[in-house]
Image (cartoon, rainbow, N blue to C red; front, side, top):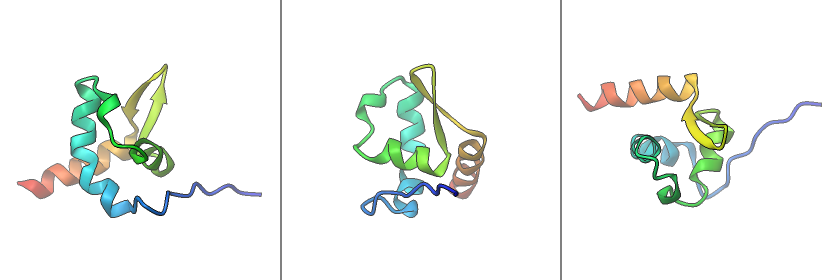
Length: 74
């Protein structure tokens, strides 16, 4: 039996990707309480963000996505 994480229907991958840089900024400023409902669960399901000792951090995948988004801004 395999388990596949399911994203909430209201938060498509493109929406999460579009908000990732702002979300990372909130995490870095320790303002995770300001991240909109459902986003953390979506990022965790995509393996872009993980819980680490009660705080959030980017995974390797999340760091790669972040780099791609930053490169696309320039």
